[in-house]
Amino acid sequence: MRVLGIDPGSRITGYGLVEQHGSRLVHLDNGAIFTDKANGFPDRLKLIFEGLSRVISEFSPDVVAVEDVYVSENVRAALKLGQARGVAIAAAVHAGLPVFEYTASQVKQAVVGQGRAGKDQVQKMVKALLGLPEIAQADASDAVAVAICHINSYQLRLQAGPAVAISRRASSWRNYKP
Image 1 (cartoon, rainbow, N blue to C red):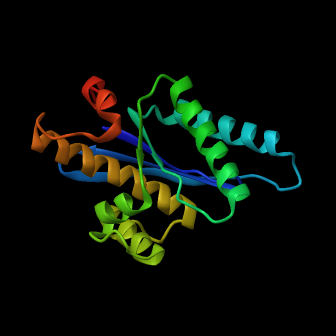
Image 2: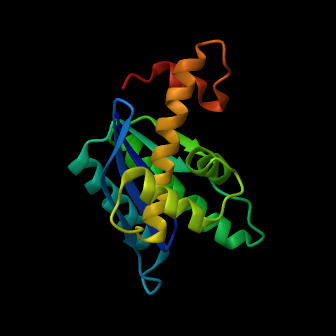
C-alpha cells in the first residue's frame, strides 16, 4: 500500500509518501509546497492543488491521508486552513483516490504512542521509523507521520474485523481495496 500523507496549510503544505512492504515501512519522498503571501489567496490555493496533483501523478499513491483541522482561536486562520485542506482533498478526489482524515492527536498516538506528544518527538520518531538520514522539514515530516498513521490505522482495523466501528469514514473503508 502506497500512502500520500498531507499536512495542509495555506502558506506551507507538507506531503510525504510511505509504502508498506509487509511489516516494513519504506519512505519514498517528502517535501513541501510553499506559497507566497504576496500572491492572492486563490492563486495560493491553485498552487497547492497543482503541486499535489503533480505529486499524485508522479508517485501514484493508493490512498491519501490528510490531517484534520485543529480548533483555533483565530477564525480567519482556521478558515484559510480549511480551504487549503479542501484543495488537498479535491486534488486527491480529482485523481480518483480515497481520502481519510486523522486528527493531530490520532497521528501522534499512531507514531509516538502518545496523543499529546510534541512536534519534535513526532519528527524524531518519523526519522527513526523510516531510517531517514535527517529530520525532514517540519511540514513534510508531519505529512509523513500522517501517512504512517494511516498505515497503522488500516492494519489495526483489518485485525479488529468488521465488528469494529470505523468512524465517520466507514463507507470509505468498506469500499477501499489497496
